[in-house]
Structures are given as structure tokens and as C-alpha cells.
Amino acid sequence: MGKRDYYEVLGVEKNASKADLKKAYHKLALKYHPDRNPGDAEAEANFKEAADAYAVLSDDDKRRQYDTFGHAGNGFPGGAGFSSVDDIFSAFSEIFGGSTVFSDLFGGASRTRSRARRGASLRCSLDLDFTDPVESTQKTINIRRAESCETCDGTGAKPGTRPSACPQCEGAGVVMTSAGFFSMRSTCPRCSGRGEVIADPCGTCSGSGRVMKEREITIKIPAGIEDGMTMRVGGEGEGGEAGGPPGDLLCDIRVRPHPLFKRAGADVYLELPVGFAQAALGAKIEVPTLRGRSELKIERGSQGGSVLRMKGEGFPRLDGGQGDQLVEIIIEVPKKLTKEQEKLLREYAETEEQNITPERKTFLDKVKKMLSK
Image (cartoon, rainbow, N blue to C red; front, side, top):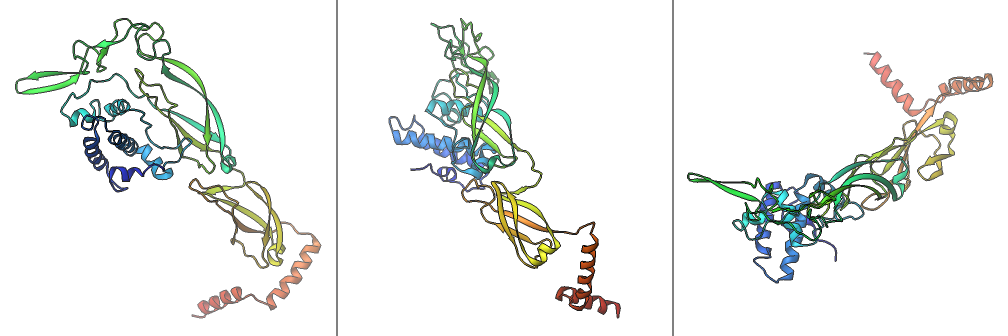
């Protein structure tokens, strides 16, 4: 069974505001929170599903991608990818500006603050040739990113030791100060809000829990992708802090222009120069397409500016189906004529005056009427 629609999960309309999304998520977080449903696997699954939906829809970029591609895979947003309840606590401590929605809902400290933080997202550009999106393809890029330190497994502490709870905030990451009737909560100055201190830091990462590394990444690009779109490659961003999940890699697609073709959605547009005789008498002409060459029939009496449609010769659509190739007829008037060609055309021009076309006759009648006023 596939994933449920995220708007359905949160019980909101597709045009819901961020405030509406947050309100709906608060309600579900209260209902399915593990502290209220101990040992209930179904409640935990619903809790993760709601968090996954909110993580996508509350992020403008992720929401745009989801509205366009839905739960499509291979680099497009399926969700935040929470593997555990602790991942959710970690992620939402950032989304809600430093304090988790859960501590807000349950009045403070139902759980000990975790140092684990999701890694930052990275951004890159992928340059494609105009015809690359005809089929799915792969591109390999090199990036430099922070990754979890293998020596200390991302804890930042020397192997054999572990971080300890901060003695000043007792692991909460925040401290309370009072001034008369008012109390203020602020980030703990000793642990910088992490809730833990490292007495003996790891020699490889100097206590940060992460090290910089060069990585070669192969990215799968789906057929039909367009210039200006952004692909989200889950888990290929910077490594998380203290064992937190990695961020994502956002790939901005840049498609090089083509000397002949232009693109409009899944359709391809081509201007085709046609000789006067070919347009008047009809012809079969070989024209270029994205996949090679194909024969196109020009009907007798074709007019300049008319558009012929070649079914299925465009790009694949991301949501299924195939675009077409649209060919606009451009009647080419020769700039130079041989004596024989000029003689034949003059003879034709004489017969043209005797057999005026309906369109030309209508135009001449309108001119005559206008001048007679």
C-alpha cells in the first residue's frame, strides 16, 4: 500500500497556510505522542507519519516539490525519512526555533534534550544537454561535505569515553533566569544548547563529531525533467551532529539551449522552412526530432504559420505520458532566382491575376469598400 497524501494525513486543504499546518500537526502530535501511548505501535506509526507530512509541507521548497511530483522516488521528495521517534525530536527542535513542539505541548521536559541534530542541506547545479531528459540518465558530481567522524561515531568524545550531561543546565540545553515576576529561558552558555559537555574530545574531529570529506555522488535524473527544477536527493547533504540524520542534497537543473528546438512543458517546438512549391503542391519532408529524423507530410496548400503536430515526439511527462513535437511552417521566399525560375514565376503571376484566391478577393473587396467612402 502506498503512502497517504500528506494533506490527508494532516487533515488540511491543499491551500492551507503554515499556521493551519502547525495547528493540525500539534493536534496529531498530542493525540499520538509516545508518552501518551506507551507500547502502541500503531500510534507510533501515526506519530511518524504526521511528522513526515509536516516536515515536508512546512518547508516551502519541499512543499513545491511535493505538490509537483507527489511521492515520486529517485531524488524527489517522499518525506523527511524519520527512522525513529528520536529523529523526530531532533528535527523539530530546529523547525520550532530551538525548542521542540513536544516540550511546548507537554509543558517542558517530558524528555531529556538530545544533542543529535539533522545535518544541513547542500546545493549543487547539474548541467544537462537539451536532449538528455528524453530518457532517464545519471550524472556524477564531486562535493565536499561534513560527515560523521568514524573515530568517535559522531559523539565528539575520545573513543572509550562519552559526553556527559551539562552540569549547568542538567542536560536541558536551556537555563531559566528570573527577574522579579518574570522568568526567561535562554540557551545554556556552557554547552551552547547541546545539553552535553565533552571532557576528553576526539583527536580526529576535535570534539565536533564531524570531519570534512570529498565524495563522488551519482545522481539519478528522471526522464522529462525541465530547466529550473530542483531535485532533492535524500541523505546526501552534510552529516548530522552527534549521530543525527544527514541533510539532503538539492540539485538545481540547468538545461543548455538547442540550436533548433525550443521546449514548452513536455512539447518541443521546431520552425521548418518550406519552399513555395512544396507548400503549394504538398510534399514529404524529413525533419529532425529529439530521437533522430522522421518523415513529415506537408499538405497541399499549406499556409505559412500553420502548425503540424507530430504525436509522441516530445519529452516524457514526469507524471506519465508523452509530449508532442510542434512544427511551424515557415514559407521561404528565394532571394535570388535563375532566369528560368523568374520566367516561370512571371507566367504563374499572370494566371494568378485571372484566378484570384478567395482570401485575396475578400481582402481586395474590403479595400475597395474602404476607399469608396
